[in-house]
Structure formats: C-alpha cells, structure tokens
Length: 197
Ligand code: SAH
Picture 1 (cartoon, rainbow, N blue to C red):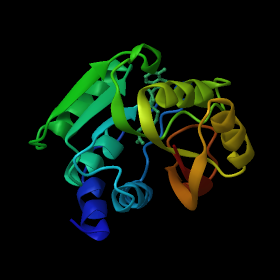
Picture 2: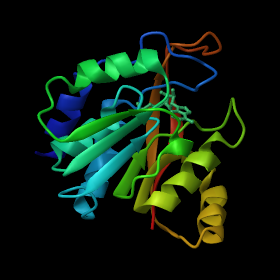
Picture 3: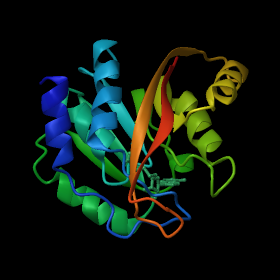
Picture 4: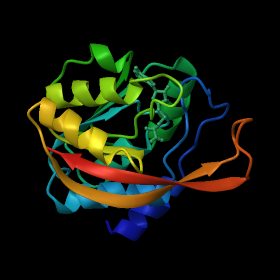
C-alpha cells in the first residue's frame, strides 16, 4: 500500500458521532494519520510489529497500522459509545486485533510500537503525560501527536524516563466544528508528530 492509498482507505472510516469535550474526542484526519503511519512504516516500526493504539477512539491509527502490515493491534479505549463505532470500523479488517475496553493506565501488555493521538491535556491536565509514561513502560518505540510548542515538554519527559525523541515532524490536525467553543467551521491546529525510543 502507498501513502496515498492508506489515506484514501482511512478517509472511509466512521468518526465520532457526538464527541465529548471533556474527553478531548477529536478524530485524527486521514491526511495526518497517513503521514504519521507512513513515517513509522518507513522507519520499520509497523510491518510485522505488534502495536497498541492508546485512546483509540474510532481506530484510525491502529487500523492504518494493520493495513500497513502490523502483526497485531490492540485498541485501548474507555468510552463504550466510541467503542461501538470502532467495532463497526473493524468489521472489514481481516487481521489480528483486540479491542481493550478500559483505561490506558490499566493496559499492561508489551508491544513493539505505540501509536497514538492522546488527549492534549487541554481539558484534563496531564492527560497527555499519563499516556506517554504508560507507553514508555510497555513499548520500545512510541509515536505520538501533540500541539506544536510541546517539543520541550516532550524532550524533557522522555529524558526523565530514560528515552529520547529521535524524530519530530510538523503537521496540521484538521478540526471540524464539532464542539461549541470552536468558532470556525474547519480549523487546522499546528501539531508535531514525534518518535520516542
Ligand atoms: N486516537 C483517535 C482518537 C483521539 S481522541 C484518533 O486519533 O482519531 C482521544 C480518545 O482517547 C478518546 O476517544 C477518549 O475517549 C480516549 N481516552 C481519553 N482518556 C482515556 C484513558 N485514560 N483511557 C482510555 N481511553 C481514553
């Protein structure tokens, strides 16, 4: 599969129906998801690897990893309503996966790669930190999306945990007006995608 065909496949997936603001539920758009996944694939972190998608939401990142040849994917998500949509997105996926209904904090299976777009911690402080520390615990390699400007925070946190940021890519996260406080209909937030090892 090419980067373009991954983006097309991922654009067909269902997204959040009534996103919960408190949970910072926003889907990674297919462009950004395919960029992140393609980078990970090119660096050898997807093909034949076990991956975990933390805060999987409707599953775009884990499904993309499976399409790019991951051996198995774990989808970790705590919101039952979202899991129902995730399961619909998984119907056509004839690959090995597990949906883990619960908190990321309780997930303790070792994997090769975590790939995630965690809550940015704008509503609940430290939400992103909890996801990262857990990911460092169970995986060799972590790919994560954060707001632009988080680079110093990410480098320091990685360093404190004996890890390091090996790659940083700039990107844009397309946010549709799904929440009351969004003023424009479509808005691109500047983000960074990082690889931590
Ligand atoms: N990864 C998806 C969704 C991102 S939104 C995508 O890229 O499109 C973040 C998701 O994390 C939401 O679905 C939210 O319900 C979930 N979430 C937030 N905190 C969580 C936690 N502690 N454990 C499990 N899931 C969590």
